[in-house]
Length: 219
Image (cartoon, rainbow, N blue to C red; front, top):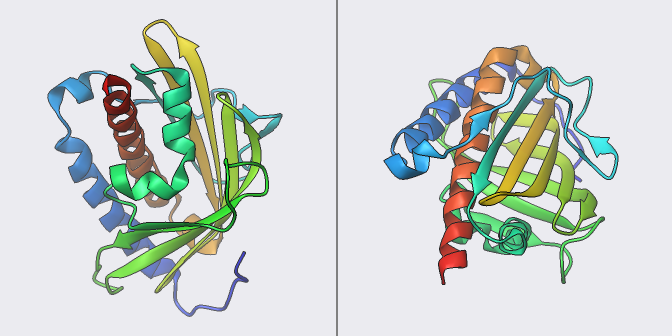
């Protein structure tokens, strides 16, 4: 995990950046197919019990948090494999440019990977690429996964993101729930805007996962 480094005047650039991210991901959500939107993600109230994987959840003290869920019409093993085969994320997520595993074999506790996503220019920051280093902390096959790690780009830094996913078989498919928190001075400088950006990204991730898993199930 890269060490944090000093960055001057970062609170304002982050606010502009997350606004742009919210706008871009919001546009992607708006252009999703009507059939997909009809069964799309459902945002969950913040007072709902926190998601957990093997007894561990998101940061309980984080001020930036978002939770949502979606039902996917595909076998549980297909949904879980699609989500945890992280090196193939770029093949079904337009927002993921690269993903590099630091180990091999099935994803497991201790596995780490670095992935990147494009960030548009804002009035206060240039266009850049955000790099996220994620380390799996807990995993239960076909049930849940939890990873943590920092994010870095030019003019932006998130100290720690904590992300939990759960997968539950239900009638007609699999219910996928996700919850994520961000911590750090920049993310917490404007909590509503950071939360909006986080939520927009998670909503499109869920829709992309649904589309990819259902397509694989039909093959």
